Amino acid sequence: MEVLYKRCCGIDIHKNMMVACIFTSVRKKEIRQFSTMTEDILSTLLPAINKITDYPLLIAIDGRAASGKTTIAAMLQKELNCNIIHMDHFFLRKEQRTEERLNEAGGNVDYERFKE
Image (cartoon, rainbow, N blue to C red; front, side, top):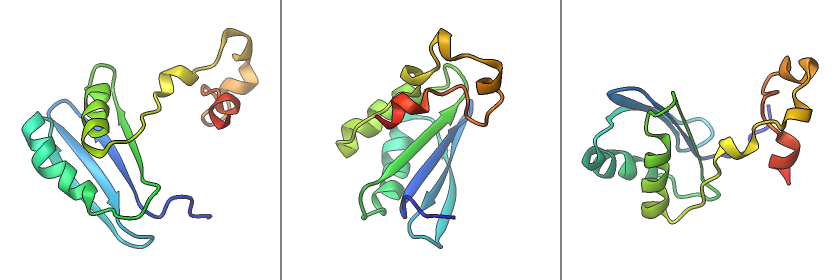
């Protein structure tokens, strides 16, 4: 498997907590739980992410609808001075929603437009 980002962070948001898997090198990862309270995010999650010193840095945020993904992304954007790409902008247009496409892994995303 080809390594695209040596250092990255995946955040999974649950109702009362977040789980972050932080890769600080190709072979070293740290899995930690965090509270979803704003002050906890700023005091514990950000320092953990700031351990990642190589760039580009990729942070992926996942969670159910209304779980706080956009709020946390905005907080990270402000603190880390980074860009946010909302996947909501890359759902398939009506004419792209074929049975074949929707049966592909990740087929509900307009990856052609995303790559542009």
